[in-house]
Image (tube, rainbow, N blue to C red; front, side):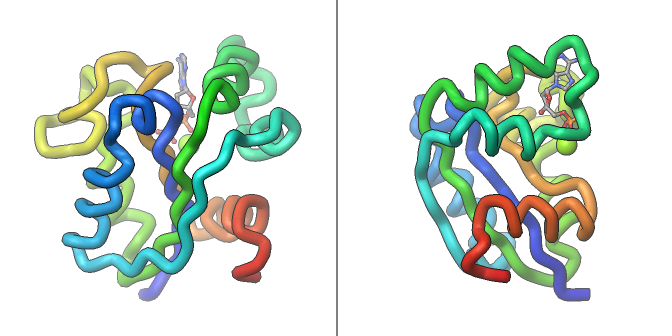
Length: 136
Ligand code: DAT
Ligand code: MG
């Protein structure tokens, strides 16, 4: 089924010069990148984006980190896009991520794991409406 996902290279990935590499991996997989934007995310938008984690002890750090520098945001469409991208990203903890995944190749710490990708079609719709309202 054709799905849409919201993908974001986090500030650590942007600083490490990985935006192009990650865009390239997504394109080479055969997924369709329908929109991109590089911005520093507003704090209020970051709190909304990570709303499901509001009660977690790391929420403040998470919002500090995601607003600490530019992020490279992508709207991605394609067959099974949600699962395809989550598989390419690897698990949340980079130490559990196999080589060949983005986190397994480029990250070591859970708090600085280079990339975000929507975890379900519903999250994809919510996150795209938040960050790419012009696509709705
Ligand atoms: P994912 O980004 O794989 O969807 P998530 O939605 O569970 O993972 O968490 C969102 C982000 O929050 C994650 O990419 C990094 C951070 N995070 C998750 N668990 C954490 C923890 N135990 N300590 C610090 N940061 C954490
Ligand atoms: Mg998540």
